[in-house]
Length: 545
Image (cartoon, rainbow, N blue to C red; front, side, top):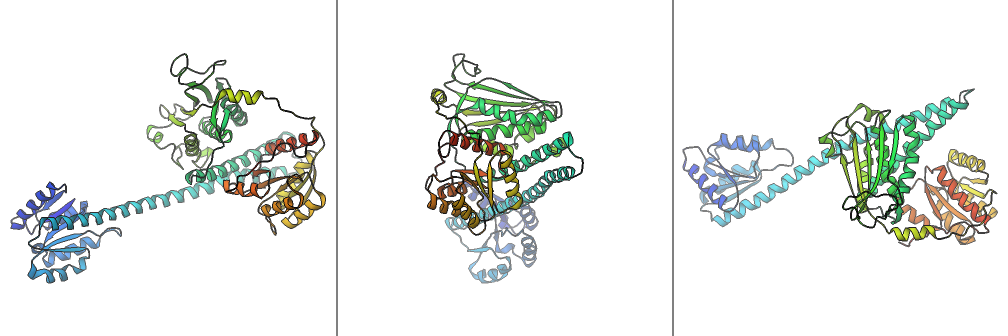
């Protein structure tokens, strides 16, 4: 909007201002005539793109008032002034306007084309100022949300750490055994998993934002994925007397990354458990919607193939529900429902944004629905179908396996953290393996070459030689068949994994490593040894970047 100022309501300049506004309107510019300086100040207070002023209106009093008004502009603002002058007064007007800064003089008579060019240039500059203003506001909002997030992160990290510390103190007391000791171990396990989930969510949301997540797509039975997630959720649900239900049967094959799909379903279940009170109910429904003999949106039933359409997962709960206002923001990072139950359960507000990103990476869609507070909620995920015939053929292909050996493996653990090293040694020995340990890369290399263990579990961030260099030297000395190299590290980015696999590692595990996952991996290697093989399954191969 352009402000066109006159000297006073009765002056000829007032008529000129109205005429100028009509000219501006003809070329698509909005002009607002200001009959006197009071009207000009009022309009300036409401915001303007530029001000067009005749030199007759620039009395010393008006200039001083303009200096006061323009001096109160925020840092991003520098209102353009376009001033009509006469040839004999231009130098005098220029000296008057110097304190005002952003002023352009046009000597009369002014060609219309010259006027329009000057005004359009002024408006372009003013738009840039408003863009800078909006950027300032976005940065300030981002800074505020960052501070809130850091405060929330500190709170959420301290809660599980406090629970772990308390449980350890209980276990150290004399006479603590049986059911009481079991409860404390469960607390430590539960809170450790909670910490790992928060770290994973933080890293994954960053990777999604930067476009660094690459899906390992394959034909995957979504029913099996849901069953695994329900097994994991069963313990927390029992602890809160919550009922878990599953409707629908499998197989229902989708084209997706099984690890990321499990992350999607686990996050939705975790969210439902978190926002559903004690004694509530969580239902998971698996269906196929699309081109079926029964017509669109016919449900998938056992024995019927689902060849077209989409696989659909619905997660419903009888929890606290979602208000209409919150539904519009539920998938935005750091969004949390405002309720005492939500605050008591904690979390960083990253689960649902991550779920949406992963679903969309699969070419799918997620929707949220709720009838309002205290009415429960429903999340619906739609995913593209896979090739069920190919999946069935792969599942029915016979796999040759030898008799499993029950003897333990010879394992070398190279870890510079004393507590991590010794606790892993204890765990492996309880499982029946023979363990040696080293605290640095150079010590690990010497032990590996001297004892030639069947398996080496190597940290990456080691002193003297890092884990990747250690793996390269072991491979150079012993070749790929010498031993199974497994990385166990806190570095979880895709490029970290690729770097380690290219260095010679066969497997890559991110800390904190799930003991069940490690046990299954070692059991597979033990079976390979029993069958006469050197290392169980084929090693993971890394692509050369």
